[in-house]
Length: 198
Ligand code: URA
Image (tube, rainbow, N blue to C red):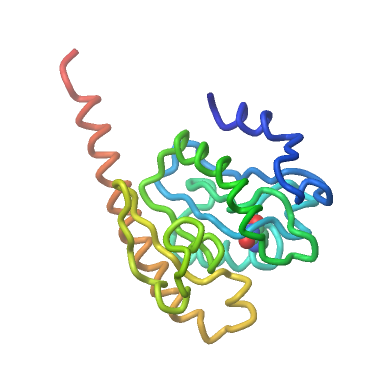
């Protein structure tokens, strides 16, 4: 099983009512072996049209944040808690998230990220704590089964509340530092394995 096969399997998905009004399923994109995965809420109009996550206004801000943190977008994996656009960009309903999360879990199994960044309340509640308040939990690492979760603000929230950008940047500096450290460890392990006698 790989990500392409998974995408094919759900191309015509009808598991929840969101399928009725979507243009296409937006599975996510990026490095299939990424150590870092970013999970948003759900595709918006631009994402629904283009079939790619975070390509609209919020996506442009996310790109800027990643650039500032020197995390190349193509090096990581970006996806959403629901893969089909909620009509009018409303927050996905619990039933929709509970259904679609089975796809996300399969992506976790295939990619095996070490860091998962949840953007905003919906993915934070679905993946970390159903009663979490994003303003309270953001910026704090949570470790589960060897994976580090970092909840932070959704870029769409930052567009509406620019004063929250400072806190968001603090979170992304933490994400950058842990990510770079993990990358270093992995490349040192690879070197070590390459250097081992056959
Ligand atoms: N907002 C999200 O949560 N996800 C996207 O892919 C785009 C905007």
